Image (cartoon, rainbow, N blue to C red):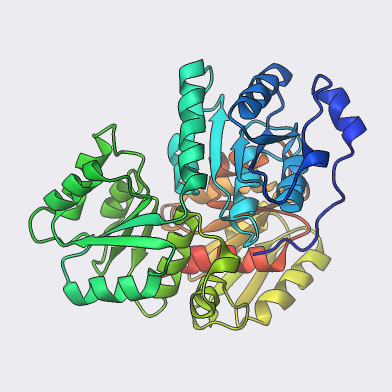
Length: 423
């Protein structure tokens, strides 16, 4: 979804002083130019990537922190982004999250090159590749080849692995258009052969196949270096146990349980991994792909605990959620939050402020996760400032997700859809 506001572009003079005096191509961009935005705070590595980008025939844009990178991505809409994780001000995870939740930028291919080994997380967010520093020139060259292949593809390739012919046709009708070439099979072994014969951009996989199980197929794909990075979306009617879901998360980019709302979610997920340009989709598909922010059945009668020491924030969030037919209760610090949860075990989700007196959000989340009955309770952390490392610190403390204040209403509702979704 589009961000509420975009800050003015970064001034060239300030920027060139901070990145070793490199003058990038932002003032020389033409509509037909292909460009790569490099978001990297290491001047030496940024210079190396800058030179290689030019050498490969692309115009180059440079940003040394996450906030500047986001501004430039929204202003210039580059052909691709090369992104570091450990950035000043706004980290790479937050940059990726905001790019992929903005329908103007979500189609842009993102390649991570970072000192942190977090490949699985990046690929699940929609990245096209991930390298862990230190990297060799050969690895960087391969990364550019992947970027080139992705942005040069006018026709994307989708593989559907589903043994129900009727369901295969339903998925084809849902996703198919002139920009997608769809191949379908009902057999796992045939899917493996197809994956070796062609370069598919995404796979939709049902778990109940006619020869081998979807679990076995996932394992075989994961163990095969040639095809292990192919994005896989699980689309199944099977009720998954916690153990099965945890196992699938190691291999699949997304898991969708077939249900009344699932086709819209499937279209949205596939569009993300195919890097489809939202504005070029037919109107009937565009309507499905872009969420409509009105009262939704899935929100009705849900109960959310708001934990914040500022009564104004509690009131504002309660009003927003009340408009969506969500019930709210509140607590003014972490200690009160734990007591409130114990008295209200039917709470569906927690919005947890971080900076609070007596017991802050970090400690509160850790203590909540120590309680057996709340180990799986969705918690979204709220922080007043998007500082470097905040997201990971929140996740490590027990949060499922993270939002910076002031809270973007559309983003909040989007996260609630994810964490309240039951299929």
